[in-house]
Length: 103
Image 1: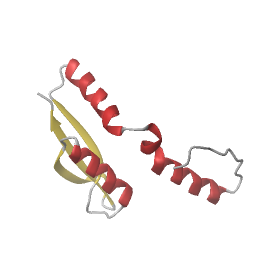
Image 2 (image 1 turned 120 degrees about the vertical axis):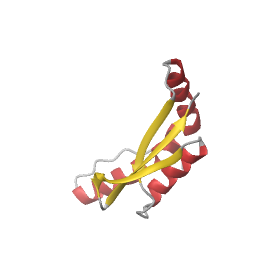
Image 3 (image 1 turned 120 degrees about the horizontal axis):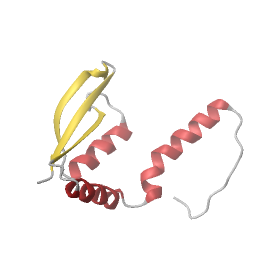
Image 4 (image 1 turned 60 degrees about the vertical axis):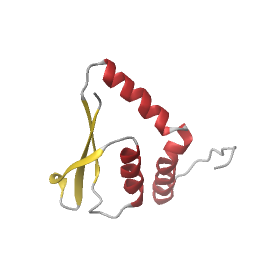
């Protein structure tokens, strides 16, 4: 990532979609340490008396790298796979439910 940013106007829908995709893929890097963001969220959940945190993401049944990174991050902060549901979204987008015990 560079230290500078250029703002441009894009009218072509395909170029705009490609640019948006690239930006969204880089967002965690732009915001810095996603670990720190998660730690703050977890502290909030504990203060609210939550015993578990549940997240949903695309299952590893589908090979899609951005979601592989997401699952890797969740596992790194202590989430464990619970169940994969094809009825949550659809069979082409199986939903992985992951859970983490807080207390």
